[in-house]
Length: 386
Picture (cartoon, rainbow, N blue to C red):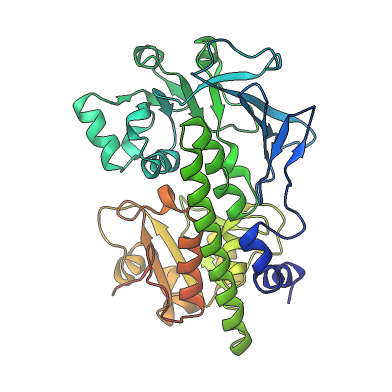
């Protein structure tokens, strides 16, 4: 058993009571920073730090995930109830007046989270609308309450200006992203770097920060408490199942695209999910998150995978027949031969919208597939039909 595997079993069993109350030894305790400035406790997020200031505002420090010795951004969340910006707000901080009421949100997972917060009316604009399947967004665009501001990488500036946004939530990239035109508008840019967290609960915990931005702090804290407890419960049930069945199925993900298969490597969050669910990745020996491989190499190295999880977006169902028709090579995989292929049509189920902030649901699916107990009803995946 790998060191990583042993770590998760120890976390699930030995540290469960502590995790339900907070976390094991790594918990960030409330602590004073300068005078009465208090660092707020976060249990899992590595790239986020929160501070409460005595003059009524809250600071978020976003650690640069590509160089953790530096900060990517410092956000000063100043309540609208304060008439002036406090003098303690440092120079260079991005000042955001809270709660946000006319936000431009560029990712479907954050739009989904805002719906759970009951903050749908705080969304004034979106980008890449054709890829957003949330009803409230589509209805809002149709009736004019929400503006489609074009493509995230090159939004239509005139439309952005038209919504009078008080904050733009956008994903940062290592290259920096070409957001220069947005910056020049003077609208606060809020980097949503949660996707760079290495662990599922670390990413989900960012909802507490987003709750602060939208005036839903108490709700976000309550939601995350329930989510983390359920996640840990699933991990414990999985470790208990492994006591009676030490077999760790090998799990392959997805399909090749345009002649290339992007496989999950050691630091992929999908590899983490599989590991916690009691399985192994055939490419876990490769450092990094993903690797582009030729399909022939994947057949050689992962042809004996026990389970195949496929995420796709199509108006029609993916079936064994259609897989064979599109790529006869799939018949060489053990999982295909034995009927252990599970599919998630992400155009119909809210996999990408929900799972980043509901890791307990995705972990529950994968654990049930690998070690069935009957305690979990699959939410995203289903066994492929003929």
